[in-house]
Length: 331
Image 1: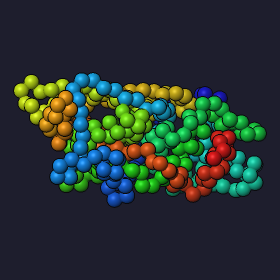
Image 2 (image 1 turned 180 degrees about the vertical axis):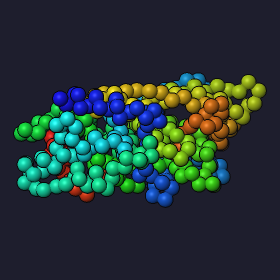
Image 3 (image 1 turned 90 degrees about the vertical axis):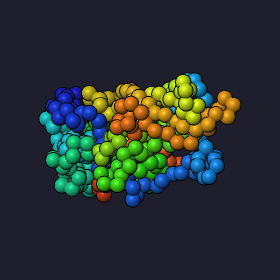
Image 4 (image 1 turned 45 degrees about the horizontal axis):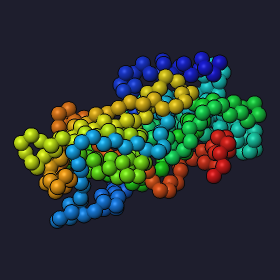
């Protein structure tokens, strides 16, 4: 019966716009994000305070040692988190049942979600992508069913509960400003030379994944980046320009089942020019500009993996320790 319930996902996803990606109304804004400078990332200063970025002609690739996992992103308009379907309890109903039968504690997580957080007419891109992207680079993937007495938690249930403990994580380190739709927002931000610095620092040097809002506009579509291939070519005539083509590999939330296991990988390609000066075989970058389709299709901002994170939920009925107990994880 559980597998039949989860085929409901296909019906929920009739909205083509929602299937295009995922977002998060609670994603970091310019006011609450922690902006990370290139200096704080460990990059050296160049002349006049500009941040030094040195590149070389040719192709280079980098991949994180951690590969993020895919998950359905539980949009705000989807009632899967709290609504029973064909006799199958929802993830939060199972959470409440576990609390009462195992912990002898009364919780109303499902009711709170329905009455305070669910929105039938919410924005098509509003959901738990921020929570998923963060959890997928910081947590092991739930891969199998867990049973507690008569309660059976499928993979989709476990991922839903885990993501709910990451949805309200505050102040992640960010690079670039979120486009809030204001008249003075800079559409070109994040600038390509800043984007390239993060690739070099996080993937090529530290081999760490990071999170990228892939939509340069107002909507937020967070995805975890775990691999990149970049090719740099000298300009045929202008000595102060190099042309860059970068392909990033991301885990996708566009899965066909709530119980999906593994990484559904997809790629994004960006092109940009970097300006600077050659010093021997190294090109000292001063600035950059998006080119071709990337002038309007490029990342908006990046979120770096925090060294420490305090998990939190917008649903006050959800206890982090209880979720970990259901997941059978010890901290």
